[in-house]
Length: 328
Image (cartoon, rainbow, N blue to C red):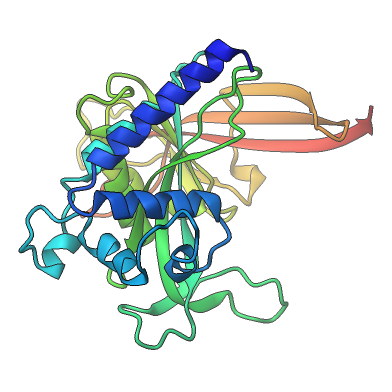
């Protein structure tokens, strides 16, 4: 690395550490030692292991005090007030936001959101320990465990060479409480980053990618409040959508139709002609060539209900097929 680039990176790192340091209200030195210990030991399974790091220069008891008190606004804050305290978040988010490169090849900021499990089957005194979803590779076993779940929202910045996203920057991590769902927490996380002030992406288009769990009408309907957000989500193959209804004649009586003809994803006989078809080939890193065909149907609708009407929220439905042709 050229000396000039090295000096610039070193200066940017120092500035970031200072901003991160200032975002903690109390016990800043302790928390920064903890951050250094975590950066040097990414395989640690508990904070106790981090206290053994040579980078953590304090007593063991200081570790938990730092975690408990770093977000206090006053020295007399109750434990419950600390849990609900969010005033520290904007400063920390702005410090991280400055590290996210501005998109050059894409015309939007790309985000991803998902829920990850943290099994704690033997921590019997753990607060709000509940049944969580965890994939199980053993056939016949149910994909569940006991512990906590966390909703993680990350930025997927593009690389300078290809414009693809090969790494992620975590922005917010929130525990999914037992009386909430991952979709509810994820929606709040999106609101935090999209409604934040003085953030690089405030006046730009944002795209969030999710798995099929976020294709529920409750999550999608809530995102209509964000004018600069596009949601790209997978859907299960047994979903049923509808076309937009034909315009009703002016003199006709009765309630206007909200939905048109049925579009059953698992029944291709119900599919009408797509609005667009795109074919593309790409080569994997192992030299395999894949041909991909993407069919796109615009102005589609999903059924809603009285609390969550969806008839005024059309979307685009894409179906893709791919096959391997040869190895280069």
